[in-house]
Amino acid sequence: MPGQEGFTRRQFLSRCAALAMGACCADALGAWAAALPAGPEARRARYWKPLAGGMTRCELCPNGCVRPDGGDGRCRARGNRGGVYRTLTYGRPSVIAVDPVEKCPLNHFQLRGHAFSIATAGCNLSCQYCHNWAFSQVGPQEAPKVYSMTPREVVAKAVENHCDAIAYFYTEPVVFFEYMMDIAALARKSGLKNVMVTAGYISPEPLREILPHLDAVTFGLKGFDEAYYRDYVGGELKHVLRSAEILAQTKRVWWEVVTLLVPSLNDDMAQVARLAKWLRNTAGSEVPLHFTRFRPEYRLKRLPMTPSKTLTLARETAMAQGLKYVYLGNLPGHQGADTVCPRCGRTIVERLGFKVLERRMRGNKCAHCSAVIKGVWL
Image 1 (cartoon, rainbow, N blue to C red):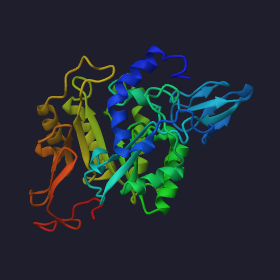
Image 2 (cartoon, helix red, strand yellow):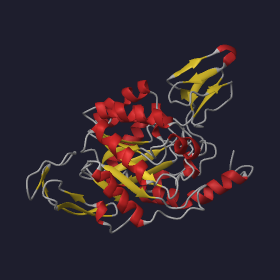
Image 3 (tube, one colour):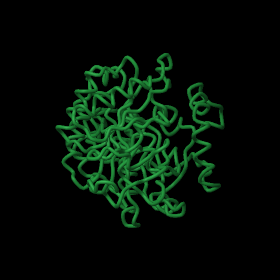
Image 4 (tube, one colour):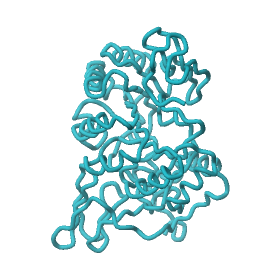
């Protein structure tokens, strides 16, 4: 075990890279967040099939990992143990934090308080720019920190910290599907909302199963080009679009879309226009779209930050395709963070970073012209 016989080089680098975020999360939540690396026994996973010779095939996501006994899936969060596919991170979160819901980002989904964010190690994609790679690109044995929290303890700590929702955030919640399902069911009974921040790389059946437990989804549409998804995300765009179509048909779940614009890779305005047009045709003109600024990280440190003029042009391009609410993220002070009434053109929600400075609305309507602003407002 790490800490007993020393770290591998990869473990050492992962822990160093994650010190700031991990320490911040734990410090913010108090002394109860002491790391407990052992965790509970691995539980039987869902959405898999046994194969001949003790092999297993995972059916949770499009990767469809086929593994022998002892083999872990590409996500590193599930694996074959004795011919049974098991979840290796159940009850073993690696990230815990209290966040404003705007950080997800969700600009049209209002809470009275904050969200209790939770994530385990692992991911079923391999984004070359991942900011949380120290947690997402490793398994639970290599994660910088591992806590021990049952679903009931997660809900209890959310209530104790005066949170109004639980956000499955920071890494891909699809890979801890069973854990998320159990937490979400208990959270709903306790009056808490559930927010899933996902890249949408999931098979249709488990997606349809989790949606009734969710109140909001932040959907990462990372680009609109199959080659980009294959080379820099490690997946196939067609599966993501299928998930978005399913989500668009689920009227009770509020959702917003976020796209990180990476210079020279997915920031071509023709691609941005295609993305916006597809989103409008699939989900309507009122689904919010967030373009966020790339910052050099992980395996793309050679690239520059996204220029502000590129983000501004992307916003204008998407709005020209008929989308009413297009936001810019990671660009503090830009008016693209504000909500503007599509009828009268006045600013009705003013933001700085993740903080709402002023809100000029009456319920779900613009305070100036009474236009209805789609979203979940208090």
